[in-house]
Length: 426
Image (tube, rainbow, N blue to C red; front, top):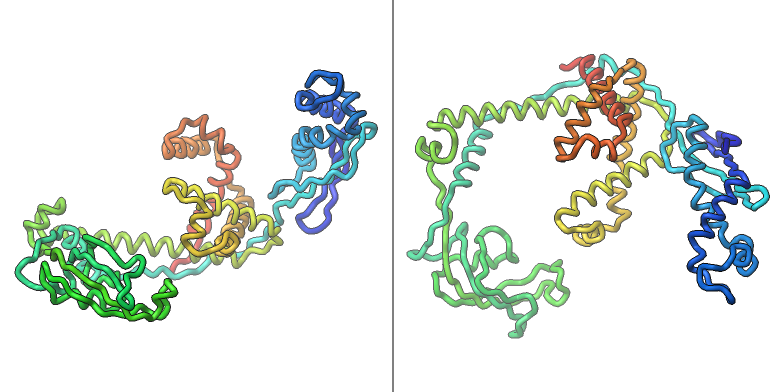
């Protein structure tokens, strides 16, 4: 046995004293020599043919120690952790305290353990359920969204441009009669009234006809991002090339037939109201669950190691990286786009991470108190769902997810149901 002592140095923090025998260390040194000898040149020997003792005499007895330790300690530490019976929540922090050919290797592994958790009053929690009333205005907003979706753009050639129109323009900007960088474009599409350009620009395009060439006088905002243009008066030379406007169809039975599965406006509006009411109900149910889980966290006590919060933040950073990857965006590039440092992004996740860790611990404790059991069949069904979701085989999923962890997740889900089923909803 490599574990010699388990020392509780503070709450949820242990130091494991681990010893690796001289015989095991010698085996590791020999493996390190076999791996490295082809890189070592000793006078009088072809590369890779120098005897180990000669290399140790030339470079020192410890020449292969570091690699030997690195080869041997991970498995030894894992075995020691299992032997200790501790439920650790962090990767061991390993320190070699002594090593020699004669005595072997002594290691101190610092680990943090899952905290003791107490949860009070997780049954009978009182919360209010607030279901939003669906109004006629809500229905009309959805109806208008359908009309906007089915709008068409028509060319305007019998009047001047108006706010709300889309125009195509050529433009070039001048400061003190000198063109400035970034102030020129051709065939630029602009929606008048969108606020896409600096104040006053779009309003001065309105009122002009197709083919007109004209000047616009505006000033850049004082907080503009280009230093030379902050607060500066400039002139834009404009050519208006086309005008189009959006034509939104009237809501009638014919339009509804073309755009939906319904035959009449009344049928469509009834369906819109029904779906809005279902959405409001689902939203209210989610809010109730959130309130209940907040209460569960309030009613739990535990001395949680900071490393658990840090680990969750790091997991969330990895999840962010995975979401960005399909868009070809790295975390560094994301930070540039958002104007944040990596530490600032992590800090933004801190509160959410702490809440998730606390809730998970509380729910695991509730599952324990309620003697929640998860069958092998339940775990198999959940693994199959994951496989179907990600288009993987069951065996592939098992390479990434332990069945034990799947069972814990299911137990946590059952704990949530216990809290909800025993809650008082007003």
